[in-house]
Each structure stands twice: as C-alpha cells, then as structure tokens.
Length: 96
Image (tube, rainbow, N blue to C red; front, side, top):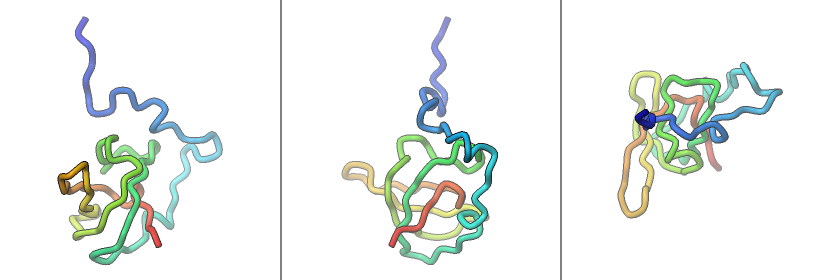
C-alpha cells in the first residue's frame, strides 16, 4: 500500500492540544488587529484547521505584510529564502 504524504502527515504531537484547551477558541487572538511590520510568532492551533499554514513554519517568527481577507500575510525567513505565509489570526501570536 502506498504511504500517505499529505500536508498534515506526522503532525500528531505538533497539533495536539492540552485537555483543558480542547474545543476552546481563544477569542482575543482571533480579534487581535495587526499593523504592517508587526512581529508575530506562528504557533499552530490544532483545534482550528482553517487557514493553518504548513507545519514547517510552526514556531517561526515573521513580520506582517498585509491583510488578505480574514487572514494575514506573514513574511518568514526560511534558511536564506524569504517566504510568505498566509495564516488566519488564530495561528498567530503577537510579539513585543
């Protein structure tokens, strides 16, 4: 049988939430408004699947570039390359 190689393969421990946090939506994180140039940390929320960036960006920090619908465009440095990540606000945490 062919192995599954989807976008969420091997994410069991990365996307796990503590028992007290299951099915809980952090409303302050969802309603937070960012300005262009703000520093944010990408922390994946396993309870919210929509607008989740790829798991390789979990724990990375970046800068807000613009708003795109309800999501934010974040510039992230991946090695020597500059990449753009589109993520909803429940997967972002403000820094500073």
